[in-house]
Figure 1 (cartoon, rainbow, N blue to C red):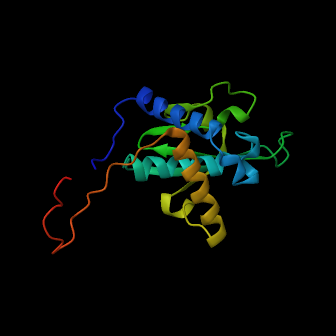
Figure 2: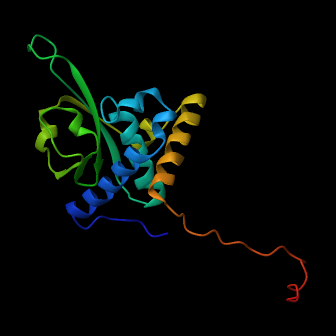
Length: 173
């Protein structure tokens, strides 16, 4: 399969919105209590799910995670944390609307935009964010399969090779 490189911000936004809609209609809420109030409090899990989709199904290179914090520390604002993706030069967030200042279900931009207000940002690699303990891995895989079912995603057909010495094909009856 060829690697997918998004030619425009709009193209990435459409893909992200399709994935977001799949999460909303899927049974993913059954597999994790955290996802029960989607999108509120689901930024890490949702980012992991869409990252896996981008990397494994669409073969998108350069997917990484950004963890940011804001508020607290005497600012008068409550402390908050948030996770979103960097996809090449794009910022991709499918749960930003859990915050009152964002109305769009999906935020895709080039550059900082709304995300630049998040201080103390840490960039994490795909491998760092996609390492799970056994039970967390089981739960994550169930959520991912539920999302793929909701997308009606059809993986490319597997090439099946005939067994050696299987003999000639059967005659039609």
